[in-house]
Image (cartoon, rainbow, N blue to C red; front, side):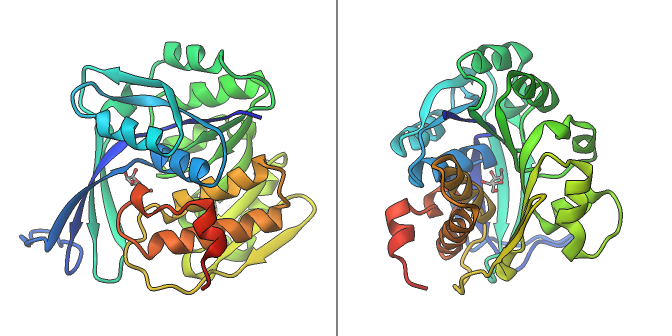
Length: 296
Ligand code: RIB
């Protein structure tokens, strides 16, 4: 099984702040760093560091996207399907507060220049049964989902960031939903207690499997036969950026390698815990070796 991650690549400008800026406030940041990010890039790097063979498709700006492609390649991701376009690379302005929480402002740039022609050319390189990993930060996502579904690819979808348009996408094509509680609530489309989110999503999309991440409360998995829960590891949060991406990459790498779901959940949980204990998006993602040898 080949794994294609078709997703965003962003330059993350990360500002360390005493608190998130309030309306009308002017505040000095304590530190500024630029990291490689984008949910697509982060998940490709997590998949690769977890040991999977990964192809990344997407787009960056010709002038400023080189460092993102270099970062993917340095982790062993195949970037022959990443386009370099005459427009700015996507970027994110990220505030990280003293508790390690973040808030993120996105500018799509090249990520919003994905065309149907690029999608057709990319998918032609893959076969039924190959896995397609998606997030919600690129253009033409509905077309991509439909085309990959028709082709018989296994779609794993992290519906992040959640938008109202997303609910109109061909989500019945999705085999794996990986989402947090906010995304799950919106996907349910009605107010239900949190414990019922996975079940409600399965009622709407009965052919899927649901992995719900709950931050410091761990994660829950549910399919039509079983429900599993895994507790989070206890770590001091420095920066939670890309914790969800790390989890997604490690979980899907485990599934693609034929691991039982319970093992893939445990490994994803450990990898995500390591990532929150360090700064930055992709630089915080551990390797499989490190994940296996870390004691919590
Ligand atoms: O999930 C974290 C990512 O979200 C950041 O790297 C940022 O680029 C945004 O896409």
